[in-house]
Length: 466
Ligand code: UQ1
Image (cartoon, rainbow, N blue to C red; front, side):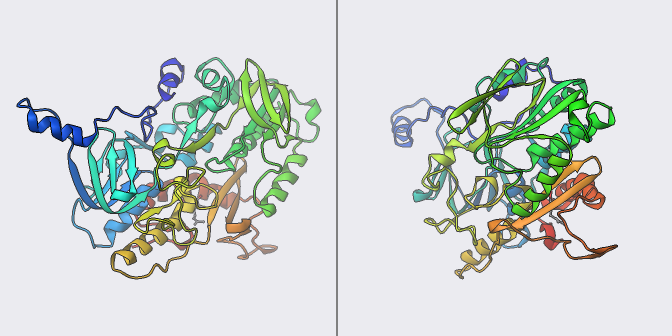
């Protein structure tokens, strides 16, 4: 999939991100057979090796890097006792991709070489995982090598599955089409040029059914596009019927957002700004300039001149197929402790986990310290004590220069870091979009992410962690 997008795409800033697991399983020779061959043959053949590490961290994304570096900083591990496995060449600050879609950032400024982010005291396997075997405390790499562990941290993230929407891979790869998505390293650079190119007609922004990373991002890019068209004199907020461009938000959800407090504010904004709401509309097909939605039992077809799509996403196959997965394919952990419900030496956080909260880097700032504390306590034979309350955040860009900093915990209950602070005219309410939050989102978070979070010294709202 990603390969076809690269080769066919006319995008200039296309980058390669290796999927964490191979799409088709590598042909693996069973280890026993391999040993048999080696013992009867005089010709040396490549044999698999088994190495062991005290801790194996599967995934070198926001969660994998935060957790492995926090563990390392505990001072309790010798070099190479902790291993990180990830096949990616590049690491992307994905929360910045909404800003790329709004024309505010260059995707290359958000990218680093994966290897450059990994402390040399960690053993880095720059390869994919093919199998997790928690019953034998081992992991098999795509080259057949086996690694054994005392504790396993499963944090590979989730995968974008472009072809779950019919016609989408082709439409994205076609450089002349007005179909794009901020959700991929290879596609994000196409988004703003399509927004700039649209001079009239119907723009549709979609949000799918099912789990996605950062459920607010689908509308952030829409709010910036609206602002762009308004400034260009192409969108009339007070009388949208008179503007050259019409905007619709087509979401599979019944509301603008999953948290009632912020959903109500966003619904007000939608109405004020004359954006058509197509609720419970799940995009299933892109065909030329037609978007087909599943709406209850019916299919609804809408013409578009610009389509911003959020693809479907799901767990990687090696996670879904393993004994650590729940029926939906996520790593089944206790929602307060991040410890696996069946394997006490298996842990998870971030997008791949079953933690019932919104999948964001902000969530990981709160999950990682809990996981690390509980894992270290378990190594010492102590009870787990750390508790994660579901904290996550969605800095919702509602226009250029303003962000509504939605922060909440399990149950959709707001948990605002700055809420209630005294401000002119009363107490600060994070349901109101503010300029200060825009600069946090645009400048501070990307900076603190690479300077501190991936190094294991940032705990989000709890501040620095030394
Ligand atoms: C955060 O720490 C962070 O990561 C660096 C974000 O970017 C992905 C965020 O969006 C948020 C909200 C936080 C949380 C930190 C504070 C100070 C609210």
